[in-house]
Length: 92
Image 1 (cartoon, rainbow, N blue to C red):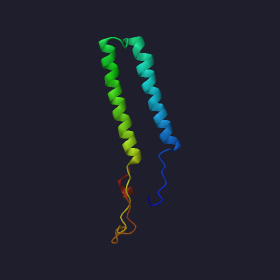
Image 2 (cartoon, one colour):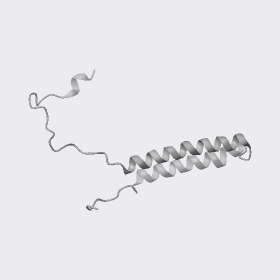
Image 3 (cartoon, rainbow, N blue to C red):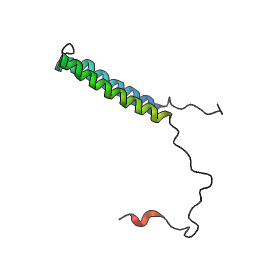
Image 4 (cartoon, rainbow, N blue to C red):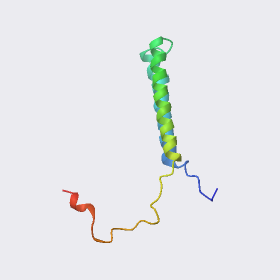
């Protein structure tokens, strides 16, 4: 497909996926059983809510990894009236 290199398996992406997996595992399988017992209704509800939010967080992360950030239009040109202008005058 146009020779585009797939770069979603980079070190930062894998680090975030492993970190999210570690947080999910330690929360659901280490902390919740000691705190609420997963066999109780409250424990299952807490695990279900946390799993939902973890899934939504992972879905948003994967969507952002696969979404093209866009490009500067080829018709873009700097302001011709004041070529020396910059936005530093807004800084204190």
